[in-house]
Length: 130
Image (cartoon, rainbow, N blue to C red):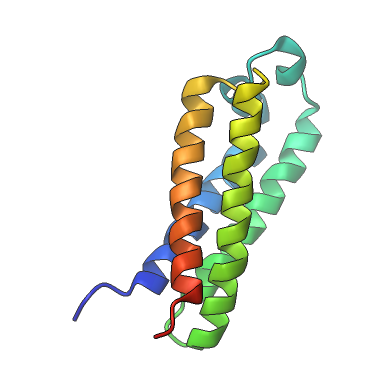
């Protein structure tokens, strides 16, 4: 039996989202300082970052639920198309922030590569006919 790529991608997406979410919820200031370059960007209101974290956490939890073997393949495909587009959007946002010198290169580039790769793979699997 081979790798269940749909499940693997949904779990990867879910874990990534939950990771961002938990970090935003429990460590908003260190998260801002790790991501952004300018002092004005690291003084973002903690509650704003916590709301950001809750959104990521919720998305991740839902995505992990969709990875369940009992979920229909058609539902997983729809989720992968949607999430794939969202991850590519996140990668583009990181690229724009790097170009505009609002985000640290090393953090933004790492996020951009991971999010772009995950988004591309999810779109491929979402549109692939099984």
